[in-house]
Structures are given as structure tokens and as C-alpha cells.
Image 1 (cartoon, rainbow, N blue to C red):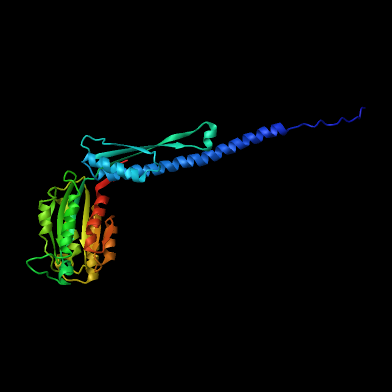
Image 2 (cartoon, rainbow, N blue to C red):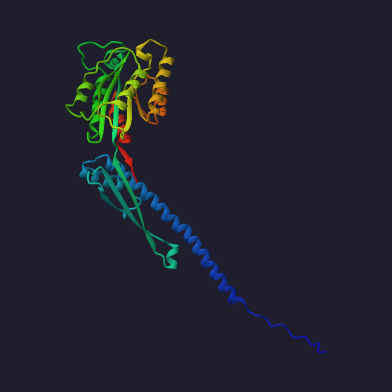
Length: 344
């Protein structure tokens, strides 16, 4: 038997190992490139979508004036676009020009993926917004404290009425609020309240300079106590059953008060707590009918917790107006929240 042993041949596998390591490195580089570059792609798209949403929201507020809508949309896109080379196209997809369409695009350059022949891609985003059909009830406090700035805290303001502040400022801001809407899309009514509440004008398209609404608002005279519950009840009745209101329209109450409620149903005397609970119960009844409630708290002598509660119950927003000088901006903010709906 041949027992002679043969030496084992040594094999140099370094070349094969290098190939494997290179392939692994390239794979790892591809994975890292996917994570980084695709992440950048998605982030750019998110920012672009935010820009077109902002442009659509802003432009829709100018409808049906398409020229103003396009200019507003372009301005807001410029303010929000993710990079300087992002572009935008503005269109109006419906014959009645009640909608605005914004399409943004952006070329994204890849870094690591360019090593594999993928230099980048086009990011696009689209938004369509339309002017919202709305039936709005303005609900304004006309209690005696609404002349406190010019005549001190009193339950009755002097006749004939000179400037009653903050009532005079409230009138101007309320009329300005109505002017922000288009009669083709919106109906506006007026309820005012003190010890009792009154429907001063049923919701209609008769608003704007020289309108029935302007006359009704200007005719409000401050005196008496504060009955928020009756005011919400009267506003709810008109906005749901008014002659000119529409079933398909968004139903909205915009309620302003500067004080603490102290009257219950029909103007009966009750404690502040009872009056506040009565107001909350009427807000709940309104919310059950799909009515959105926005509230404005004027000054510092009010029950701010109640105003916040009423807005929360009505799925709306509470906005504080510390002084009469803040009223225009306050009403403008609420108008911007109401006027536009994002469709796509």
C-alpha cells in the first residue's frame, strides 16, 4: 500500500473575495441610496403638496374673480414652495369658475442613486379647492356693556346714539365680515341679543354695502342684559328653516359676546351658571343639526371658558379679540376658515 502523502495545494481566493466584497458594497450603497434619495424625494413631495394646498386655499377665497384667484394662488405658492425651481400651474376646471386647480412640479436630483444611472425624478402635487356654499348667521351681543368704552359699564346707553364703543366697532367689523363673501355662494342673516334675542334679518343674499344686512347691523342699539342661549336658538331656527337657506349649504353661526350670560329662556332671570348651561344646551341642539359654531370673545369681562365650550360643542373655533381694534382681524380669520373647502 502506498502511504506516501501529497502536500495540499494552496488556493488564492483573494480575487473571488474581492468580487464578493465589491458586490456587497455596491448592494449596500444601493440600499443607502434608496433610503437617502427616496427619503429626499418623499420629503420634497410633501413640501410641494403643502405649497399647492396653501395656494389652492388662498386662491379659492378670491373666486369667482379668476384673475385675483390666480394672483393670490401664485403668491402663496411662492411663499411655500420647497425650492426656487418648483413651478406651478393654475387652472379653473369648472365652467362656473367655482373651483381652482393647482398643479406643482419639481425636479429632484439624486446623489447616490445617480451612481446606478438614476439621476432623479419629477415630483408633482395637485390640489383642487372650491368656494364653500354657506348659510351664515351673525349673532351679535347688544347688551348694555357694549357702550362701556365710551360711557362706562351701564345697562342702558344714551339716546340719540352717539358712537357706542365697542358696539360701533362691532358693527363695522360685522359688515366688513359679510363683505368678504360672495352672494352667489353665501347667505347671511342677523340675530342680536341682550335681555332677549331677536331675528333682525333672515339669512339671504342681500348683504354688502348699502344692503338690508348693513342697515340691520347699523340699527342695533345696545341696552339690557345678556341672553346667549336664546340667541343661539333663534339663529338655529333661521339657519335651518329660513326662506333663502339651502339644504346643501354649510350651516354656520358666528357669535360675538363681550360679557357673561345672565338670562335664560325668554329672558327670565337666572344665575350666571344656569344661563351658561342654557347656552351650552342650545349649542348642543345646534351641533346635533350639523351647525358649526364660531365664537368671538371681545374684551376681558367675559366668560372665556363658555365661549370656548360653545365653539368646541359646535366643532368650530374660538377667537379672542382683546380690544375693539382687533375685531377686523378676528372676523377675517374666521372668514378664511369658512370660505374654502379642499376638494382633492
